[in-house]
Amino acid sequence: QLQLVHSGGGLVQSGGSLRLSCAASGFTLDYYAIGWFRQAPGKEREGVSCISSSDITTYYKDSVKGRFTISRDGAKFTVYLQMNNRKPEDSAVYYCAAGGYCSDYVLSSIHFWGQGTQVAVSS
Image (cartoon, rainbow, N blue to C red; front, top):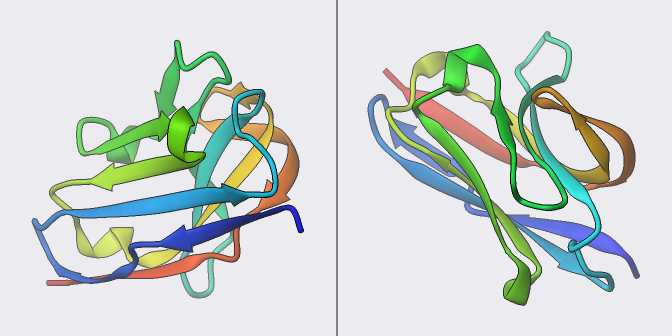
C-alpha cells in the first residue's frame, strides 16, 4: 500500500522545538516535491513549507520563516519539518504531502497525503 506515515507530533511549550517526520511506505520520495500543510480548528488547511524534488529549493510561509526547516533523507524515504521557537498560533493538525511541484510554499498536483499529526503549543 502506498502511503505517507507521520510521527513526531505532540505538546510543546511556547518557544520550544519539535520535529515532525513523514515516511513514505511502498514508494520512493525521490521524484516528488514534498509539502507540509496545517489545519487549525475552524480554519482552512494552509500550506506551510515546500521542498522541490531536486532538494535545491525550499519555500516557507512568511509566518514560519526562520523558525521552521524542511528537509528530506532520501535513504530513509523520510521528510522532516523541524519547528523551533514555536508559537501558540502554530497549533494545528499537520499534514505532509507528495506531489508534482512547489508553487512557492504550497505544494501543487498532490498525489499522496499523510494522515496528519496533532501539534499543540502551550502558552
